Length: 282
Length: 266
Image (tube, rainbow over all chains, first blue to last red; front, side):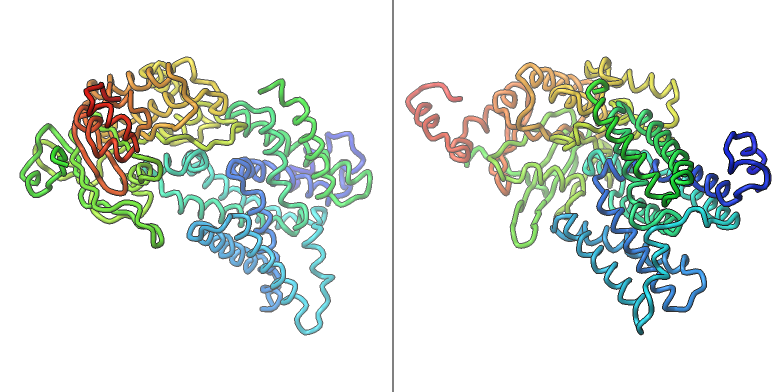
């Protein structure tokens, strides 16, 4: 990590000086890794109208954490990933097999998951407060080892993304058209849902369950206002997410606020700005 | 019903009448407890444009979706080539009725094509050679100028031609077209039918077209299938569009009477 600290010393910030505020430097690296991956997957979530779905995945991940706690695991992240992948898989199957409206299915799952999570977490009179960190998130507490783990998971998701993007795009444009070209739409939806479940779960404790969905949806929604092709859409989403991530971290330091929510507020400001100028790009 | 030519698959099993043909045998679709299609038997030759007509809810679009394998069905689809080797899965081209696309979607025509033909993400890698080929394909249907337009900004007719070009890449053996009910002006429709007609001759395709425009069907189709839950009648446009079954199905009784008095039919 020393190379990273050396680079940052060139910056004119108080916290960036040698030996100062290592946690800020760690957090900055984590944000630079996290936000672009969220933005890329977010473009497809917005294409497919799955914003509510990705929100529900966070709830599933929370239940996974509670189950992990119950099993006495020191690091509940493993059980959280497992549970939220199963959760994503179930929602996708039921959405496909039943004629019920998608948001109803998601609503049912989402509320059941969060209720189960709270039930398990408080079972036997335990206090809920230790789980608060998952709700609000604390990127400043991330350690180099955890950044390494995050980098590996995000790298795997990116490689996967590289190979399935075209087919997912086609499925999102028209499932019948995709089917006529030999694409098994159901399995692509499942795989995509699982990828989103994985990144939401591994990032949840740093960003916070309450705002994590906006990391996925807001940059893409803002980019969509002014983009005219997939290339512009993706590049803009990545730029917006990096910009709000880095600016949000620095501002949260000045204002002494929670980092996750500061980042989201900047993303929303970008969204409304692009929304007002969208007609010039139409 | 004397003119009805129900396809008899025992007679046809011996061989094909042309270079290749498609046999739809005993197709049926039931969703829940509702029978949508039953006993559909059709024999479609390549190089022919077969139009499927029928009233609303006749199961026309369902038939297309069943042929694509998108909804479960009974019966079989056989694609037979001239040497009578049975091809299990013919290459299908499909032009959907509409994309149901969010009109704000930042997807250009080029994105759509690259997503279909390139291995690499359409937004990340655009190789010149690929872009050139896409342009060529669009030119075939007079849509080359639409290359970098957004899908949501195309008119109904333009979108239809773009989707047609897409369905021809790679060149299919069976081309399934689901014509939109609305949103295309008369000129656009004319151009679309002319393009499809040219393609039929140029590539020797089996074309199955769900149509709502009986005038176009009369002018361009080689064969017409009248569908309402099952095949009511199949034959040349002349035969089908002047038959009693046709008039009854479309409730055009006044036309029938007019014809009876020596007037000209529709």
